[in-house]
Length: 234
Image: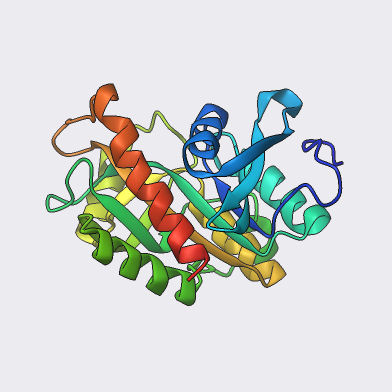
């Protein structure tokens, strides 16, 4: 048990999927795992452990933003020995060829600042995904026929941003989408020698203003979860 995770030793699997929303964690666990058991509900940040095709998996909410993600990822790694951590969540599309409902598999995550920024001082560290997870996720998406994009994303430290100039440069430099957690997850995984990946569903688009209707989210998010699970155990 830690300050933010009430699970007992052994309750957390070595493979952890991390949606930001705790209720999305509940939905994913009940939809995709066999015999999911609630292992954490401290501060309402739900976590469940079950099995997928005979493999133990934990699905633990991480909250919104890199500071919150950093708390849960640190405790999962340091206190529960999580070895593979995959962020599953929504993102905003930034390129015209990236459509709402598409999946983005993040090869790298650009950010202005994160909870780990102080470690590097003047160095601009480049947070990147684990290659084996990345390749396995790409293969899983291809096999499913899911429209998928692979490349860089932007992890913002604010939700209500007012920097159109920054968005313009992200688009100019090929950034596929924007979310709020992956850069810190990739940095923590590098620091501790763990595997990390972000598999994201495009739920809205910064250029077009299009947003995914709520009734369509479950099926689209289901593709993302299954890609992440297949990548973890390939």
